[in-house]
Structures are given as structure tokens and as C-alpha cells.
Image 1 (cartoon, rainbow, N blue to C red):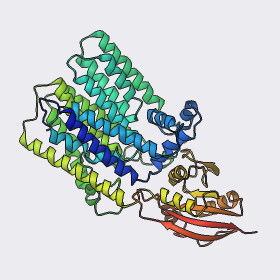
Image 2: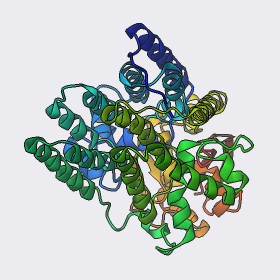
Image 3: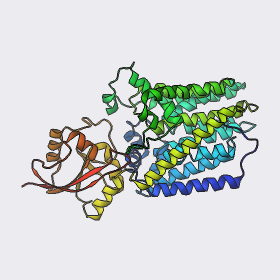
Image 4: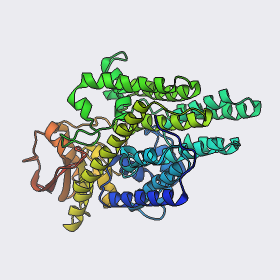
Amino acid sequence: MIIPQKHTNTFLFCAVVAFFHFITGLVGILNHEIWSDEAHHFLLARDSSSLTELYKNAAYDGHPLLWDGLLFLITRFSSSVIYMQLLNISIMSGTVFLFLKHAPFKKVFSALIVFGCFFIYEYHIISRNYAISVFFITLVFIQLNKPVKDHLSIAMCLLALSFTHIYSILIVITLCLVLIFTNKNTGVKCVYLALLVIGTLILFSLKVPADHILFKYDIDPLLSFKRFGKAFSIYLKGILPLPDFTSSKVWNSNLIIAWSKPFAVVLSFVFALAPFFIFKKERFVLFFFYFSTVFICVFIYVSPIIVATRHAGFIFVILIFSFWLRNILYPTEGEKNKVYQKIAIVVLALHVVSGFYLFVTDVKRPFSNSKNAAIYLQKNNLQNKVILLSNLSSGPAVSAYLNKKIMYLETGVNSSFCTWNTWPFILTKPNFERKLQRLAKNDTSVLLVNTFYLKKNLGNSIDSLPGFKILKLTTFDDAMVDVENYNVYYLIKNN
């Protein structure tokens, strides 16, 4: 489907495209307000005094710690989130350069890939551990692409990849199996067998404690259509990540799912089967694609994880690198079917449309209102007041922009990052009022309430609170992350 080319792209072409990609990312991050998922990991690093403490603080996150480790180094020099964002776009644009230089695809396909939804927005503008995952996958394939394989370098890249993301570990395990099957040298087989064991151990070491809050919401029966739909939808969300252009909640949406769930199921089934017909003659490529993607599907099926577009992006990444693997293992094979080629162009073009639509929307609208809320408090000299906030999950980004810990009503302590064993995670109105009376000890304080939580759990407004005079200061609305809009109140404690 993606046509290989005989010659690599010139250094100048790759450098110009990667530079434009970086500048696009720079414009993006200067207009992107980080949200809690980004801020949580930044704060884990910022507020850990040592790598040992970072490991302890991250126990509930279920991810390897390479990205958090890099943030730990950055936060030794600065507490500004812009350096995290600059690191992320640098890694992603560097990956784009390497991909363009070494991937065996024609320019039109490569260009559409690197300016598609995942490479230009989800993994570029949003600072998480996805860019670094794609970076090390690319390094692995660059090494595999060489006529004479340096298996030590391949193993080191695979080892680094296994410390980036839980899904990356599944890719590492799959690639190790492929390399064991395709190598005749016993010593080489042993290297990848050892790496497979290490990857498996890392995977099991990431098991989160049983009191993680997601387990309390994971109430669907193990055999349920909802679980099946959640897991199987990643093929559609990954290969055709069209946001719902008709909705204000555009991020993490899918136009096809919003339009017709039954049709989305059929299309997901088609996308899941399509690689079989493309790679049916190349068994190791077929194994690489299906073993790794089904592995991810099974993990999503049995786990309480909430599937987002960025998670499904791994399906797209695995598909792209499956084509690259075909070029490595079966260099005489190429996609000669003109229909497949045209479909590939259309799908990749839709990726570009989706990516730039999200990019432009992010520039026009606040991604999160956390930064606006923090700026408001600073401009009005309120940042030194006791800052009370509910709901917990909408707090880390505010804490990051204020560069201070805030009082979460759910936990009852000054904190920054989320503690995922907090229960109850959602306060009822009586509990909310009791927590305020206990925690608002000063005569005056500032209360930030997540608008989504306010509407759903507190009767849409706070007109009065027992024991307080309450003054509504302002509201921040219309964020792309709908759970990161805020109402800001000034509290005066009654004598």
C-alpha cells in the first residue's frame, strides 16, 4: 500500500521538512495550554527530590519512567512547563528527520505520515511519552535496515524503547519474537530471548496497586459488548482518527463513532482485517502487526483504561512500521495494487486534515483553561491565598502554572500531582461542603471548581455555602478538554 523507493531522501529535503515540522510545533506549544495528563507527569518529576522518590510517586501510573526521568532532569533547572514542551517537539521533529531519511517510502507517503494527526498534533503538541516511543521505534528500524546488522545496537534501542510506554513494551516483545524466528545464529537468538524476558518483567512490574480508582469504575462484566467495543475500536480510531467536527468536544472524539456506532464497528472490523490481505504473503510482517495490535487490544479489554485517540495511534504506528519491516525482510515485495495505493493516499490525507484541524482549533481555543485560571489569580494578586480546588483530576495543570501546591478537597492535603488511590474521587455536595468547612481555615481563600463537576454534582451553581460568604469572581469556559473549565470563587469565612 505504501510504495517503497530505491533511494533515500536527501539530507536537505529531510532537514527542511523537519525544520518546518519543528516550527509548526513551536507555534503549537506557544498556543497550547497543558492539561492534567501532561502536568501530572511534569509535577511527578518536579516535586520528587530523587529518582527513588519519583519511582515511588509514580507507582499508580502504570508506565515505564524514561519520560518522567527526562522531566526529572529538566525540572532540576527550571519549573517552567515550556521546557517540557520544547523537549517533546524536539524529540518528535528529530524523529521526523530520521524517519524521512531512512524510511523506505516515497516522499508523498512520508510527508503525509509526518504531517498527519499523530505526528503533527497528538504526539507533537501534547507533551507525553508518545514522541519518545516513536523515536526509539524509528531507531530500532534504522538499525534493522542496515545490510549488516549490529545486534547489540538493536538490542540497546529495544531496551530503551521498553522504558517509554506500556504499549511499546508489547512492540518490543513482538519484535524480539520476530528476530528470534528470523535469525539462525544461536548467540543472536539468545540476546533477543534475554531481551524478551526483560521486557516481560518490565511489563509485569508496571502492575498498579489494587486500590487504583479506575478499578472502582471498572464494573462492566469481563464478557461484555462494551469491553469488546472499547478494545476493538482502536483499529478505527488509529487508522481513521477523524475528530467529530460537528461537536465542540472535538478532541478525543471520532466522527464515525458519533455518527453511527454500528457502522463504526463494521469499519473497525474492515480496518482490522485489511492488513491480513496486504501482508498475507509475508508471514513475519503479518505476525508483527497482529501479535502486537491484538496484544494491545487484549490489554485494553481486561484493563480499566479509558481509550483515547493517542492510545489508538499505536495501531497506526505499528501499521506504518509493518510496511517498513516488509521492506527489510522481503525487499523484493512492493505494493503494486493501484487501488490499495489510492486508498492509502486518501487515508493519509484524512490524517493530515484531522491533525491540522485539531492544531488550528488548539490555537483558536484554550486546550485547557488551567493557564487562564492561573494567570487570573496572579494578575489579581490571589496566588498567595489558600487555593482550594475540586475536582482533583483538573488540578495538576493549575498547580503547574501557579508553580505551587494547592489544596485538593478530595485528599485534604496540599499537593500538585494526582494520587490515584483517592476515594471518594467525586465528592457529593454534602461531602464537598464538609471538606470546605474543615480545610478553609484562613479568613479568606480562593476556590476553583471544575465546571463539569459543578454541573453534574453540585446542582450547577454555588450560591451559598454554610459558614462562608461566597463571591463568584469569574468563569473560564470553552476549553477543548471539557473537564478543565473552571469557576473561580472568593471565600470569606464567617466569624
